[in-house]
Length: 400
Image (cartoon, rainbow, N blue to C red; front, side, top):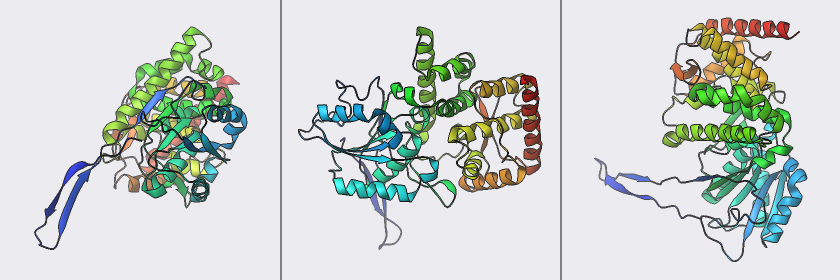
């Protein structure tokens, strides 16, 4: 484990003789690696931590129960081959169990195994929900235990696996309890996507589409051209052209996300373009559980805000129709019955509280750029909802 080094700070007296002010900082470093086969017997990334390889290797491994059923033999064989003393803690996980109860169950199992938090990182193998929970556990356990992430879903690869936020849901609010805590290492292995069902691949594509709409027109073009085939083949690169497309789509999505996160890891700047699709979706998602996946709720939010942008002249009719067409081609929803003005006003009010009293709502400006607004009204939302419903009905009629 790389030893944290604090930057020399200051201890100064205030104007009072019996008061002091302390100032210190600690740099954050974390690494993300593309890895073709994280559990290949020749791959040692999970064994050494920041280049250190102790003689006795121990790992506490938290794994999605479904991943364990599908890949358990490969995971066990890897650790056995390398003589690792390990414990596997399986969690049957989805958004409905993203809670403190699940986190404390993991802590109990971790306590039973016992680790040296200085050099025995927790390993988490699973999707974004599990990584969020385990990240919170790692941050809280003895005030910080290293964690290595192996995302197994597309949304984990391009979104949850590259940032520093952890969290659990609480009191029917999404990620109401959480922290900022960087994993030491994330290994991105697309081979896991083979066993991910089609709907969850589409779920991850929603977060990729987000980056395309607010930051990367080239990424949007790739999704428009190759998206349905990438969905069909689960990003496995079954032809040279699809391998190039899959690799570029994933890399552009991750690089764009990191460009936005790196200068603002603790979200001190509240105008964040990566909040696009996350203004109304947290409330819609929690009310819809378990019917909507996270990316699906984000896509509904993006469809609504695309229409808001169109009504304000930020998005042309042609661009609006292209965006909605790509959503359909990626098998993502652009509509949900929960889209009604009262709930959306409630969602916006909650977002305003979260964003220090202002909406700071990112809207698309064409394809590949965004602007922030602070003046969306409930009446404007009602009109946009009607527009979106009408557009969806028209498309259904065309397909029929």
